[in-house]
Image (cartoon, rainbow, N blue to C red; front, top):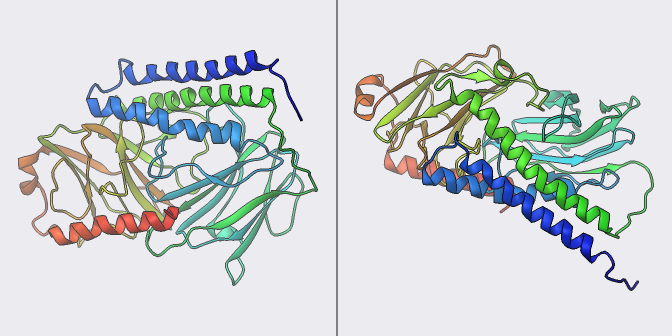
Length: 395
């Protein structure tokens, strides 16, 4: 079908608005509360650029609840909001008036959860409508599963939706990165529909505008949230202790977060005895609530990879130079950022304690029988991380 150029003015205006909004989002990087180190400014700009693709996915390319696809949110080069280093997050748009089926192979990630949320006041939606976690989900002997999302009750795995239901998210947390396989699944709306391939002027202009707005809103939202921890450094606190909102938190155990500020000549030691739990993890990131590059840096540990002391204690060291202990959190050039601890399905939820000191005082502070690693062991730790990432994301 031949067209004409009568909508050129609208299309050009839509593109200009998209670019102007993205330009304005850069204000975040240079606000008064942002650290002034070059690395933080540079990574802030990179954060904005990386999240353009996620915004387009949400508001332009995968925003049709009649034809949704399960697409991943974060990976080693696209992050925000305290992404779990162990995770593969996937999701799709839905409409609470319709019925959907998620089906496929569950895989064997240590933690597996499916959550439905309503639209809401945050960039990631509002209240949680319902969820299924791990053992709640029936999986057959071949590893296949099926979950129905609908307003009316359905036999088997079922999450009841509401009129405001807006998105479904699948969380997979991997403990043994190299030996746990990810889910392979799809989502389908039930009912015969014919896909319309035509992209309208209204859809592209609205999609571009909403995408640019989401880049700004989501990055400002998380930066403002992390500021709440920044004023109370070295204290582990949960979301609910600092902010009363309906954000879609991980079901089964809410994270504890602390803000760290460690100059080059200092170290921070974090100590806690992990509880009996279905899964637990420690994440480490920068001032943008963005994990360090976990492909190449030692910046997390979990219930599989951590080395505990002989008495069961987890001892973590934030240090700019390798301290020679197994559970090193590498700042990767940053002087401040966050640490997250997740206890999921735990018998109790202990709060880690932080002790900050000069680097030269670390040796005297550590227990005499503290576990150590050799240079060869450290190289293997790092090599194993990259192998696990490749398996998870199929690079």
